Amino acid sequence: MADIENVLLLAGDALLYFVALATLLRARDRIGLGPFFCALGVLHFLETYLASIFYVTLPLGIVASPGSTVLFTGKLMLLLLLYIREDAVVVRQPIYGLLFGNVLVFALGFILRHHNVLPLAAGRSADFAFLDEMGGLMVWGTAILFLDCIIIILFYERTRAWFGGHVFARLLVSSAAVLTFDQVAFFTGLHFLTGAGLPVLIGGWIAKMGAVALYSILGTLYLTRWDRPLGRRAAPRIRDVFDTLTYRERYENLLARTGCDALTGTLDRHSLEAYGRRAVDGAAEAGRPLSLLLIDLDHFKEFNDRYGHAAGDRMLKQVAHAIMTTTRLSDFTYRFGGEEFVVIADGLGADDGVELAERVRAGVAAARDPAGGQITVSIGVASCGRDAMGYDELFEVADRRLYEAKQGGRNRVVGRPSA
Image (cartoon, rainbow, N blue to C red):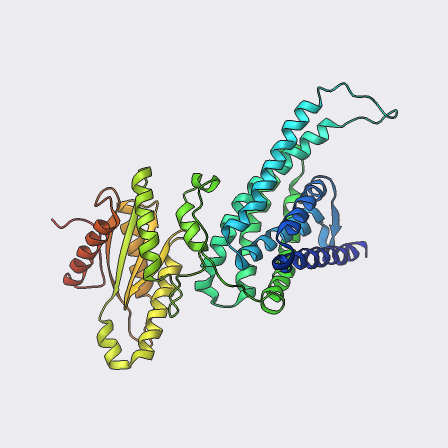
């Protein structure tokens, strides 16, 4: 009976936490985001404290902490909602503040332990071992949160190709995937600092999945019923800590709320012109590999003429879906125009770029067109460094190889110079 009571209490905790923080988030236009960020910061200490010392039993022998189950899961969901309603630049602000403050705890703790302390009462003294443990867990947890936020945003955007406008499914799948990673990562630090055992890992994961389901429902209600979308605005360049990540330019453009092709859900040509140049310049400057895939549907004009534009539009959607589900989470897919698509694969060299193109070709070929026939594409691949160092030159190489693929019989990939 006590286990059921704990489940109900955790649900009550989650409901109170979400409603309170979501209320501050919704009021951001009137009172700013400061109160929301401050509340997250205050609750961060309680979250870490509970995760390190406070656990309850749930049905089936599950052991979980309200700190990670309710507070951390809720915080990640709220940061995702903040991204959806605002932009990347806003999301990163509380993470940087938490990370800086946690490191400062370590620094101040080191200085404070050298003070000559006046005891106020017998048996009461500063517990620096506890302070070190809490500081370590908070720094570790915030570092993981830093990665969590990047991954969950990328994952959430990728699920657009899988679930379209179904917000609940996108929140549920992206949150479940990222919090599985988070549970393993945080448990590693928790085990090292506190000696927590395997039941904490397994029980915590099960409890987090339950919290994910509840928060996904609440998040969907927030987005669809309570807080209507605001005007989109493009995020400025990310020039600080994110510069150390290979996601830097990809992340910025993924977070820019404009530039989507209305028919296929890919990014549009304007986004390609803006992002492609920066991506190639960044790869060339850093000596990092990058591949550009230029993809063209075979015999699309004949299909359009025979079956009509409505069927042609459905085919374009199918092809875009096949491309986006075959490429990596970090790759960007653009509709260049008509039946042509471009994929920017940062971090992939020549051989890997051709391998990716072959997967795309096979993925598209596995689909059926609206008339029941096979869909095929021809692909030209060019790689930064080996083929060209500038965007225009790289695109020209890919375009020549696409022409070779079509001349060679279509439904094929050309990614190397002709003999």
